[in-house]
Amino acid sequence: MNHMLKTKTLPVKDQSPDETLRERLRQSPVVQEKNAAARQLILKAIPVQEATDPVTEK
Amino acid sequence: MKGQISGIRRYVGAMNYPPYNFTSLPDQPDEVIYQFSSQGPSRIIPKVVLFNQIDRTFYNLALLDELPDGTFSDTVVSNNQDMERVLATVIAILRDFLRQATSQRVFFQGSTAARTRLYRMLIGTYAAEFGEEFVIAGVLPDGRQEAFQANREYAGFVVYLNQSTV
Image (cartoon, rainbow over all chains, first blue to last red; front, side, top):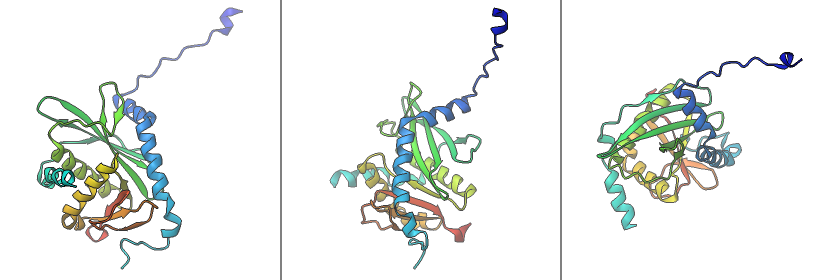
């Protein structure tokens, strides 16, 4: 019976340095905190400002 | 205030420094990653400039040091004696990013209030130069944005391409 329970182990695909960097950035608490803070600040006033652009409008 | 003034003097002229060479990773829809190396007299520090999409039209910019243990920091004081070149490189990267994402806006803020003030002074110093290419808005603590004014306290900044130059 035991042989029927064996599962085939697939080779683990090595991550490229680029993929590793991307993954480490996504997992980084610093990055997550910065994005959360930016999102919170930027989105705070967007409903008010959507109709007009205070920067370019004279 | 005296410290801030001497601080800004250190960085005045950054626009005239040659940026470091930089590379970018293949784009993902919601993140764009650039890399370059800060080359000081005694060490090389890998740097990452990360753009993460936080809204339909906004990306958040983060300048990060890659630490030897593989983690990232935006608060470490590297003292690598090349801050002008680092800033020049970040500006070149920002330009590269916005020229490819012409309808996007980039938000950034300092990792500390002092750094945000430093950025404000730098923007004020180069306002005329930036203004030809970029529109710069100050973001108030309540999130409202206004045309950048050098004498105002901001929580962060938004930069986008001056569409008349696109």
